[in-house]
Image (cartoon, rainbow, N blue to C red; front, side, top):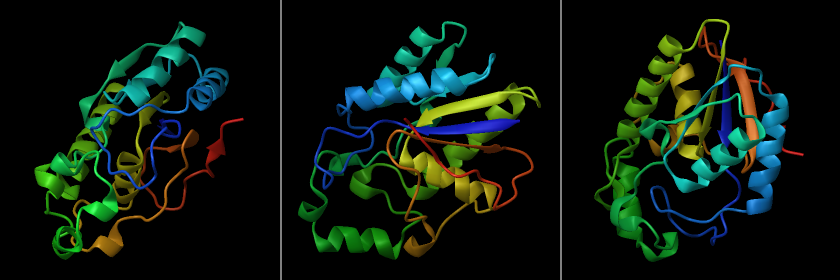
Length: 199
């Protein structure tokens, strides 16, 4: 089984903005380019699952328009982390005390009263389990999703179920509008393919 992780296009918002569940516009040209790349690369019968955020749903719509044989299903567990009252605020406006509280209890703290990192890890683990169960062993599963979800997938593949230290959260992931594909089972570190840049 292969899992394709696809990160949505670049947001049309300031990089300093905190957003997770917040609906924001993304680069329409990059979305179209990414949809075209996926339509060309995905095999027939691929199981496409989509975050409920519009930045991913719009990509799914364009993909399915180009590839009518594909059916995209919304999966709430593929949504980005919910930052509660922090949503839509500038990171530098949140205050050092709030950010430090998160760092000190990184896995369990709920930024802005939203979700904790460990809650995100649990729902992504559930999504992985469903994907393993519902996709044939020789099939391809495709997630149209976000950076936080992709980071969680990589930790889960390494056997990490919960986090305690902020330093353990991956600092890097694939860029906006990029794709990576790897064997989902067995979860062995180091088997990821290099990111494929939309072109």
